[in-house]
Length: 89
Image 1: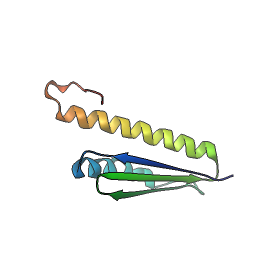
Image 2: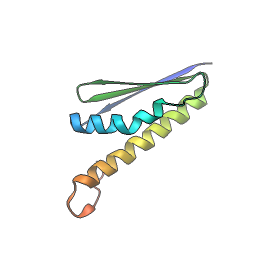
Image 3: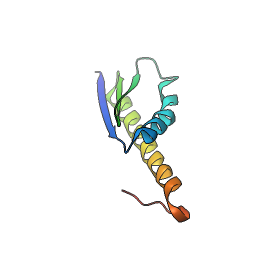
Image 4: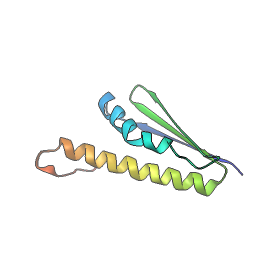
């Protein structure tokens, strides 16, 4: 059974989109056989498509991407906040 998942992330601007794309780019390298991860951008939207021969592999990859995106958001916000405190949105 094959599985495919699409994540669509709407970002605040080009700088944030480019930053997140750069952070996630290494995830496109060294993937297990039969797995694909692609990224595409449209304006301030980053779309990630994960496909694999197993639903559990696809799901675990999506969860890892969501963790990476959340961490990026926290670091991005921290770098822009006075006093170094992160405010979640």
